[in-house]
Amino acid sequence: MAARAYWQGQIRLALVSIPIEVYPATKSGAAISFHQIHEPSGKRIRYEKVAPGVGPVDRDEIIKGYEISKGNYVLLDEEEIEAVKIESRKTLELVQFVDAGDIDVLYYEKPYFIVPADDLAEEAYVVLREALRRSRKVGLGQLAVRGREQLVSIKPCGRGLVMEVLRYADEVHKAQGYFREIADTKPDADLLDLATTLIEKKSAPFHPAEFHDRYIDALHRLIDKKAKSKSNKRVLEDVEEPAGGNRSNVIDLMAALRKSVGDSGGTSKAAERKTSEEKAPARKAATKTPAAKKAAATKTAASKTTINKTGAKKPAAKKPAATKSSAGKAADPPRTRKRA
Image: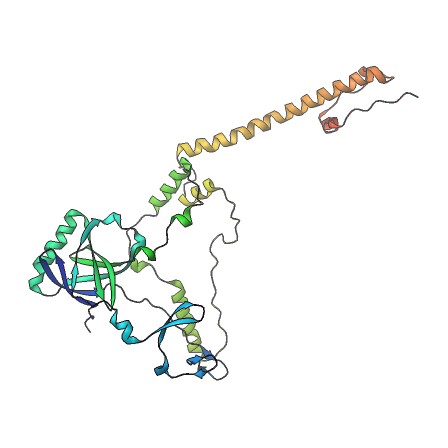
């Protein structure tokens, strides 16, 4: 069965008109929809249209309303709504051309294929395609379809043209509101080198068929199991925990990137030099620690000697010198013996 055209008409560029047909470039994925079921009876739940204080109502009694304040509506019937719909024109006029990079990715909504309507339109179609490709521009226009006006862009796609419906400005959130709290700082050069190496290592051509929705696949397996068992007993699928799922969020970023790259000894010299420099102060501190303790012990022994000369009966020379083991006690203040 041939695909049904989303729109038929013509592209107009100044005095040139090109008859075209527009077809959807995407389709719904393998989504699984569920119904609500009354478990005791196995019957599907149905919903009725009801009005508070009135009960069930007929569809013929339902019209559309726009709420202007709490509980107050402006009522509109279908004829009134149809009267303000934009007439579906059969012409898509290209009114502006912009650089492809000028359109933020947030504005792209849905793609469509544009094909020439007949052989006579093919020549002008090819000329437009190659002109856009050579100038590296994207054509902009507004397409009136189904009572609404859509902002669209047109650009080359292989041997054809692709039209993408764009969102209007009031349909896109401003990124600044979400990224304002992120500090404006530059990353560490060594970390950036490792991250870049990891990206290069994992770079490959894009093949969409290699990716699957694993959740949908798991649901299909679950449904198949329950259908074959012909019972309503619960079947729980085993879920694999991601590696390192229980690990702390506080990690050594440098070590994690090195491990991800898989290069224990072949990282950049700058990264190795920085790591060795970070460890150097720790080694120096460890080297100085015994000497510091010895100095503290010597100082303490000297202070005790002075005290014994003034207040003790025994000479200080006969008192044993302080050792490393008594260094911890040296922190206590010296006591003088009271004379009787």
